[in-house]
Amino acid sequence: MLPGRKVRSLFPFVISCSGGRYDFESNRRCEGRNITPQGSNPPALGSATQLPARVSYITLLTRVGDVSYLRSCQRGLPKPRPHALGACGGLPMPMPNLLKFGLIIAFLTSLSSGGLARNTGLLFVSSEQTNSLVIVDPETNRIVKLIKTSRRPRDMHFNADHTYLYVACADDDAIDVIDVAKLEVVGRFHTASNPRAFGISEKQRRIYVPNPEGSSLSVIDMDKNVIIGEVPTGGGPEEVFVSEDGYFIYVASEVGDFIHLVDADKGYVVENVAVGTRPRRFAATPDSKELWVSTELSGEVYIIDRMTFTIAGKIEFLPPDVRKVDVTPSDLVITQDGKTAYVTLDHAALVAVVDVQTRKVRAYIPVGHRLSGAAMAGDGKTLYVADSFASAIRAVDVKGHNVAASILLDRRPSGVLIDTIPGPLGEERVSRHFLRTRRAGRTRRGASGLASRRPETHPSRSSTRSTAKSTPGSQDGSPT
Image 1: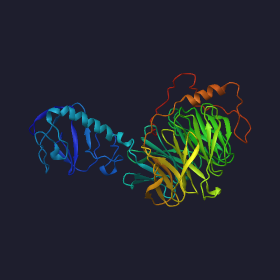
Image 2: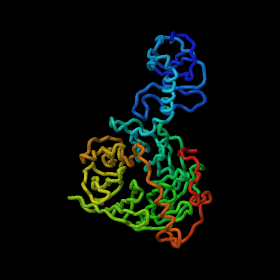
Image 3: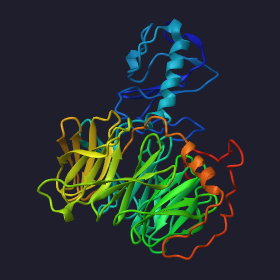
Image 4: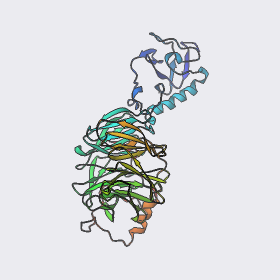
């Protein structure tokens, strides 16, 4: 095709190149690198130096149903060759395949609008003392970006498709919402005082936040950004885990050493089970049959059978040459195949490797000085552990049982999360079966230390179990 020839195309486009951008429709050169099409939001990925995914491609934008003129490049840009647009930094394109090329452009455009925010493999590390999140590229062990948040960020959770990251900020009584593609704070939920951990039910559009000062579980309506209820619990609720179907919430009470089971629809505690001293973190097995709970001061992990809500087992940690008082289990991670669990022993500076089926400790891995949060890479080969005392992230080779690399940070990392979407969630039959077998004839017990009582159902919640399928609201997890 010769320059200046009129071509019928469904995909007029703009191509960014090293010298700026060239708009082939308006036949002019555009400065800068970020492109915002009319009538749309800014590109999710930002500039080439801020791509969450480590890919290299030309920023392409399309529009449908127009006639474009592919004119010669002017004002210092070379003319396009008859069978290529590479002269302007674009991609080689045989002109008979213009439509095919347009489809490729549309696909890349869909990626730039947010698709590349998923499965980037980036590490998100909460830093309490700097009031920020540190974004780390694990392939280069370099910091990609610092995101300023509300004060004292701690617990973090992605929404289902990893487009948003929610961060509990204890000193500002808030949960910040971060756009994973833009890597910036785009919203905020207001909570009760001192939120340290939380859980999300996207189907019911609820956020559950333990309120340690009020000895209750706060229920936040995600669409209205208001607290719509408080569920009384035992003293010092610290950690929370939401069941896969959103019908039940497990709450760890540090004062009473109880795990409370909360019925999300009814809004009160239906069962309690005693565990070791100071329960800290939860981890569910991939088949959803067991819930593991670390108990920090008793140096154990308790295993709860979710079908019967009873203690199915207990794991004690006795590493050699370590005082019992220093064996303080904190975070725990179970691999996607459900075969191995990794438990961080904070003061002992060890990671315990546990066989899930036999519940036996296979090994102890020395890691740093003081350990807190942990996260497993998507390939299951590397465990990332926050070493708060050394202000570093340790990359542990789980096969070799050694620290393969260390990523130095500024101050005290706390939580660690990796942008990797796991396989299918566990089946929802567990909590539903639990409901059917427990509903009839069971005595509703209040929280430990509290008189048995039956609070009213949340005013905004209606029962969804009477039908096979519910009709939840928007499930994208986006803030309003």
